[in-house]
Image (cartoon, rainbow, N blue to C red; front, side, top):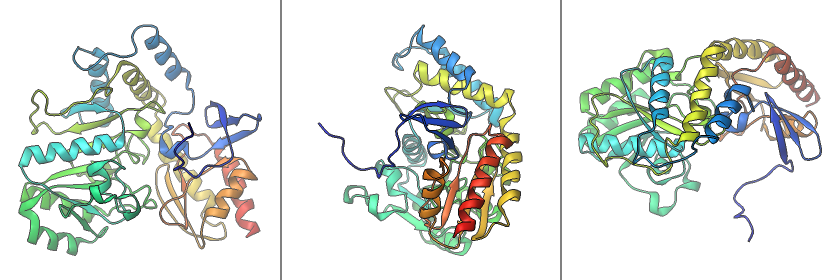
Length: 379
């Protein structure tokens, strides 16, 4: 049997990782400035993370959600305190797409409506409803398409108001990323988020903040939307939540009533996943990583802002989009193959996406800054 070939692969096979570095099967060392799409939040193989997982493996690694699991309660308690959402409830699942699916479903259960508003440039996942609110026709199969899903332009308040005026009574929810990642590090304006919240309240629609990539300290706030003082009805999270272990979650406003069987998952919130997620929160708190994300993001921007071929830098904390005056693919390849540094791209071909671990230091950052200057100076 062969693998179903859907991924364009770099010819690199990492076999070991520590902190912000990877080593391949040939012993070559690489600086990780992308974290596997913002998944690596506290660095590879952090000792506290390793210990929590090892200890849990020696006890119990899995049982279903038909029994009590005190680790889920510990995770919910620590997440509520660190994020500032102590009065919300937590539903645990396995991925960002699954978190968004459950949030969209719960909104529809709550208000009995079926339409969903999403935005240009969005990416919310590849599963059923999640891909239907993702702005990429190439990955939306015919079975996923429905006129129930309505697209509005990013940061366009006028169009938003027009859509609600016509269809507001049918709109179950509005889903928006705290910061668009795949879309190219696009940041919503305070006025835009405020207007969405206002219209959701007026028309009894649920506001879902997708913080799968922009959450967990990435933006310099625990969740990116907290900079703007908007309180969503639901917040979805994954990626950095488990530092590589598959876990996702939905933070749910207390106005939503739970009932047996309303939502469900086989693997969500299992013992190992909870141990990983608890370890991440412990490290984030003990090492003050949200503040470090802001500090190091400022440092990177100040160091590179005057480099040639950089048109703009879109950034919150360590969620950084470097817009070049050309396609970024060759720059990215040069960083990887000539300087051994992993970076990312986006649907905007000119945007180099930078998503290092939240505990990145100046020593590692200076390696990236120096390499980027060399690459851009050669163009």
